[in-house]
Length: 148
Image (cartoon, rainbow, N blue to C red; front, side):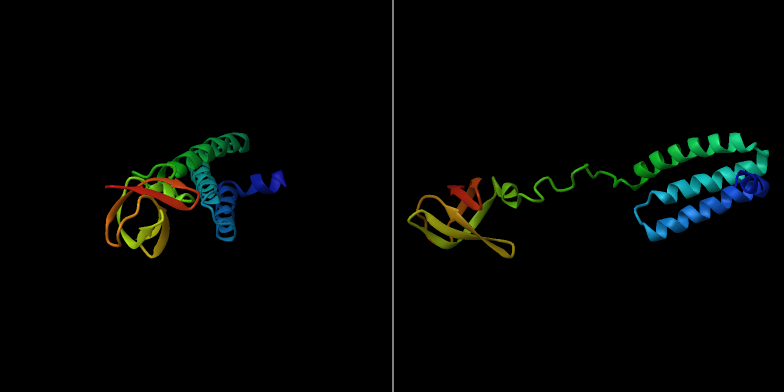
């Protein structure tokens, strides 16, 4: 196997790179792409400098690590934090501090507000429909409101 790899010379690295990029099509995740590009770059260096197979493997290893690190840096959105939406699974927490209009009056401590296309149960002091309220905290799936 090693002899077949060595006999192809620089083409073996380029073929390996194309195979790795092809694997990326089957298992998307933008990982094999960087390894494939590192293999192709190794093949081009091998063609230009006539590297030994041992040196070729070392160059590939170094280029692969560099390509993966560079790829992670490039694919990360600029200005986007690691956690794009801090309240992704805690939507109610994102509402704390915001002011809304009561959809239904708060009677006996319970009412409803509309947030986007959803309706939320609220608790607080009795108020008429249309009054402005501020969300002060969340208890389970119920928003606790007070004066704005």
